[in-house]
Amino acid sequence: MAAEAVDAAPRVFAAPAAAATVPAGSAVGLGQVTFALLLVLAAVFAVAWMTRRLRTLGSSGTATIEIVSQVALGARERAVVVRVGQTHVLLGVAPGRVNLLQQLPEGSVVVAVPHTAETAKTDFATLLRRSLGR
Image 1 (cartoon, one colour):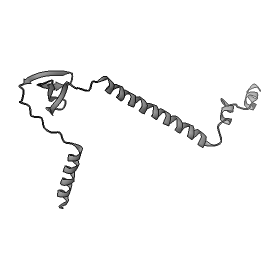
Image 2 (cartoon, one colour):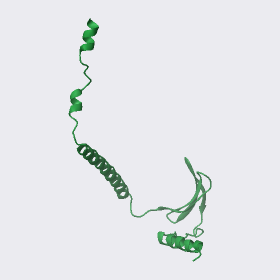
Image 3 (cartoon, helix red, strand yellow):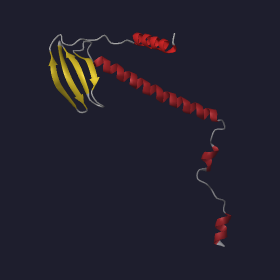
Image 4 (spheres, helix red, strand yellow):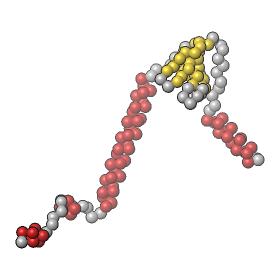
């Protein structure tokens, strides 16, 4: 008889009142989620902008060290020509180490003019015309 009394009692699920307080329109909830997402994205972009801005404020306008040229020697190895003041040095760069290979005499390094975006576009357009036969 005690088993019948337990079965006769209505079963109550956890937090039935919480299910009754869900708003009828899901547009309000979707708007809140969208606003929160936009707020988080704006905060991420603001922090990235401030970080980039603060990094450039700390550096001086005159760079005394400049990478003149570099070439890949392997998957993770490079040979780099660096100008320090008026001196050019050839460095071997590998993961975890940088070695001085040679100090180059003045005037031995010829600096090539770097390609700009405009010349790259012109070169690509010319190549495209040639490939199409025009």
